[in-house]
Amino acid sequence: MAARLPKTILADSGFWLALLDERDQYHRDAIAKEDFVHLARVVIPWPTLYETMRTRLVRRAGPMRDFKRVLKRPNIIRMDDSPYREEALLRTLQQATSARRPIALVDMLIRFMLDDVRVRVDCLLTYNVPDFADVCRKRNIQIL
Picture (spheres, rainbow, N blue to C red):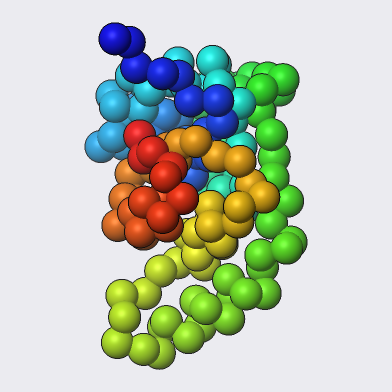
């Protein structure tokens, strides 16, 4: 039986950086998963765009052209993060001063998006599994 193609994927910045940078340790794996970007609905939270389009990437015309083509695809949805910002900021600040493993603000924000039952996501494209495993397990979201 063939694997079912996810309908909606949320992609974090680690995936985009791996896909666009041939020097990234996960580049080959990201290339192998690139079909998902073309065949499914892909949700990109705005903060991941900030992380992805940092100086190192924007100085490289080829990868920027590639990413621009991806972002223009009709199946790409840029997701507003404003409903989650304050709570993510507070939780990140709390964790930074506790004994728990700290989670970056962007990852915390994505966790809140994934945990929101109103946000329909079937899969998460990430190379940072520990920050998302619990919330994905809770919501039955596959990690690719």
